[in-house]
Image 1 (cartoon, rainbow, N blue to C red):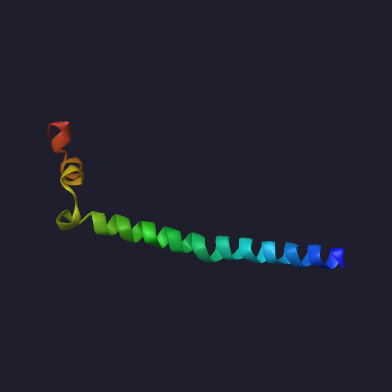
Image 2: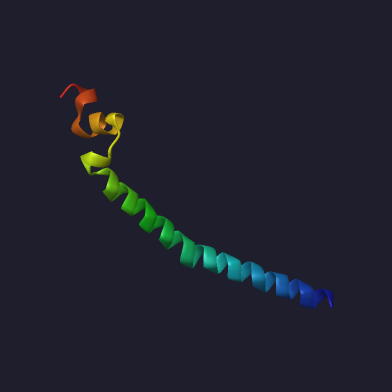
Length: 60
């Protein structure tokens, strides 16, 4: 009985790891990409981001 429980827990662990790598990682990458594309629009930038984007803080 102990071996069966161990094997079941091991299988559940591998399934969760698979879901984390295969499902959640691409979602995180897509979310980061969408956030980056959204930030490029000056309408949605904060004042500090706008200064850095246009180079005002570098003396340009």
